[in-house]
Amino acid sequence: MKIAILSGKGGTGKTTVATNMALNYKNAILVDADVEEPNSHIFIKPVVTNEKSVFKKYPVVDMERCDLCGDCGRFCKYNAILPAKNKVLVFKEICHDCGGCEIICKKNAISYKEREIGKIFSGNGIADIRFLYGDLNVGEVSGVKIISELREIVKDKEIVIIDSPPGTSCAAVEAVEGANYAVIVSEPTPFGVSDMKMVVEMLENMKIPFGVVVNKAGLGNDEIYEYCSGKNIEVLENIPFSEEIAKMYAVGEMMCSGDKKYNLYFKNIISKIMDIK
Image (cartoon, rainbow, N blue to C red):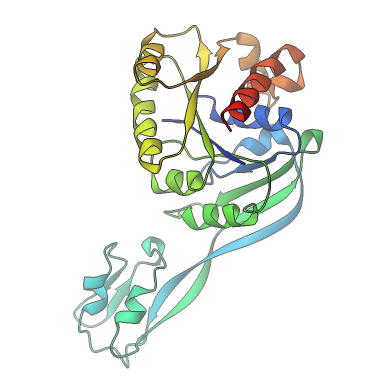
């Protein structure tokens, strides 16, 4: 079973829920797919035993063959390749590695080279949790390729918890693709609910069942409960706003690695998801 944890915006407690669920879910593998800003490893504290580079291809133009017809530039919707007056400019950072310009070139003037865009790290962490995370190199535009490789590595695993990128970007869609269930983490504030609505719409379009965990419950107002009730969305759990929890988070400790009273929140979430399954 693949369970994606996501949120409408950063800072809502998505990683808190993902890491503590992994701690309470026997034999679960935790994947941090928030490759632009991974931070689950701060809490899981893995001993990294494997490191893998992730590469992306980009076009290289042989100007002795190129006749500057412009077909490659017209084909590329991302403007990663641009025929100019005397040469073809290539912006490798925004190339999506689709291979289309090579196919469409009638002069066979385009080939591809590879460059590293990031890495995947894996190992075991606290309580022997199997853990993988991706890390996008600084300056890179898209981490979709890294997320795709993370998904490929765990595709045959039985229980996978995916800490997804926030929002509804291409990276978030890639992380959630193929999930059996999704958990939206949101704060009970008007801003939190506003961003959550976009995630709800995305999951409905992808036809992925989901529920909501309200983090920092007790703050804000009742808008999130009224919205979920109106759309028949199950609220899986309310995790209270707590100074004690905030202090543990600030020093890189999971809620459930300290006071055992917090385990009940995550066991309850897991139990409800298993009932839905």
